[in-house]
Image (cartoon, rainbow, N blue to C red):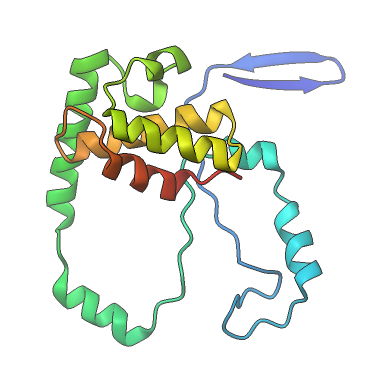
Length: 173
């Protein structure tokens, strides 16, 4: 739901959306290549996006600059076609709906606690939680993302490989 609060009252609307955001690595936009920003400027720039907001973003990916020759080489190799990926995603969504009658992104914290996770995978998640002092929101988010990665791999269990990949995407803010 989206709530709009104004001086004369509040209105609530049902809503379902996908939030996608992007930002430069620093104010000048060049990052490591030709950056002219001071460490203070970079830190101030990154703090403009509040921690609580970053904590609510399920997946965060750092996309490095790719040289042109590497892009053309990757296009020639093209490991998996869009049609193949679309099919895998469709099958993963069907598995999620059959297992819990909803998509993984909609799981409650309580439902996340009931996911089938290998002991070693849970130990890795708990160890990272302790080291990074991640929030419970981060913990549940990592379980949801790892369950989705397992679904894409057609795995009934969440393994250490699934947790490790999910942690790459959900690194605590």
